[in-house]
Amino acid sequence: MGKMSKSTFKKLTLLYFIGKFKNGVYSSYRVQKVFYFGTENSDIRPFAFTHTEHGQYSRAIKDDLNSLVAIGLIEKTGLEKTEDNGVRWSISTNITENRLTEILPRINSRLALSLDKSVDEFGYLKREDLKSRAHEDILLAKTEIGHLIFNENLPDNIEVKLSDDECEDLELSLNEQFVVGMDHIVSAIETTDFDMGKVRKVATIF
Image (cartoon, rainbow, N blue to C red; front, side, top):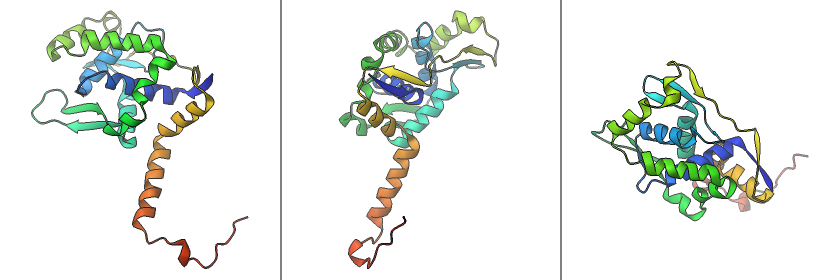
């Protein structure tokens, strides 16, 4: 058994969720609503949802999706002439090698199953039908606009059925600062005339 940060757990959940859609998720609105229904009655709620004028909304989902885009694991494609917020969220081709979309069932099969059911039931509804189902939601009706519908309930560190090494690899792979920082370093090395043979002496720091 290993331990995983809730930040990594959340991103793995989103990767699994986006990966369940055959051609990606057309619109942020659909992402928000279908994910909401997938966790509304789950004992694990990775993200908090607030009642907004557009219904159920999680700012943290938006932030983590953008972080996954920055890392290069999710693609955000602008769409013209659409009413669905003009974007499509899909799994990047870079992810096929490391199978990050398959981790969630290994660490929380109940949550994965709950998301599966939500995608099957709500994922491909027409926008108006999805909107109607969202506004008929009981928890939404009990909550005033601007108020929390439900909060996340993850501990800071989660015990999972993965090895310590696997957990450490996932933490680094899904850490935006680390991944982007390493990309900058690699890019700098590849584009700079850096040749150790030209260095006469390397000074020691310590």
